[in-house]
Length: 379
Image 1 (cartoon, rainbow, N blue to C red):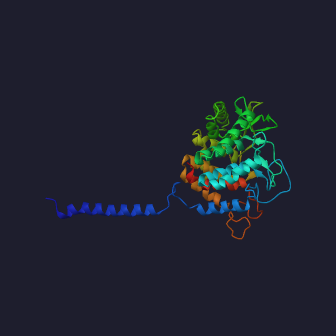
Image 2 (cartoon, rainbow, N blue to C red):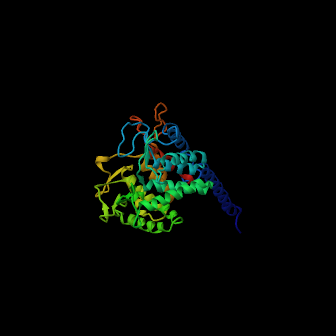
Image 3 (cartoon, rainbow, N blue to C red):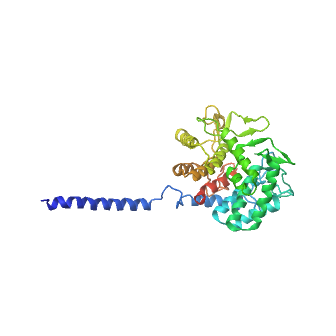
């Protein structure tokens, strides 16, 4: 016959285990989880950066300046208060995430009034006073704006978005597609002969196949070039450019990580990425504690001559993580990126991802940062 003690013992153990389980579960529920849903730990950082962009990095017509500091010199690359199609496409993508149609329309209006040429091409930059602008259009900017317009039409159903993306698609297809290859730019109806791999926004090109079947071949050729541009298993990133005339990749001694990460992002969005690339990013952080802008092509190590960090590097890598649900890596990268945000209340560029001493604050860094921090609503 079993004693009362022997009968009670397992019952007591069950009760104790149940209480422990309830306690652990309650504690787990109260702690913020490191996934991407329901986490608001970066809201303040996002709010400050966005406030800087809207209040200090934007002109009276709402166009976003390339740099917080003005410049009187016009150079080959954009400077000062010149306004880029790149920036307008990025901020429109952000306002799609926040579902703010009024703000989205501010930039839609700026595009239509200031950045569309008489031939329906998208000018890659215009001056602050918008009295002059480049007649050159960059395919990466066209694709980014087209996607923002396409998604805007899907979200809000305004036909003016559709009308513009159809015009831009036609101009891009007729001027920048050469033998089913999407080249970098066109100028006075003369297309470039080089293809920058990070310009090949595969998801958008795939979307365009719904408009015109010619884009199907462009998608296939773009994916093929990117795959061939994979450097090596030891440096699982991508060459920057392909020369159509010479039929080979342009080799430098180094790679710019921003370019490679953009290429990786485009691959991830169509599920064509290599897991080796993600493993390499984790390894770099484990070994060096940071990601850097420039890496030596032969050794795969950070370039000693260009040993610096970039907000955009972290932000684009975070966006890759958002697509691939790499939660832990996302938060690791976020912690590093937030170290580059100016949090001194007395600083002129407070809230910006910037150099607090020189006051250099670039639109690209800040726009990529807010897109990365607002990534929870990526779908």
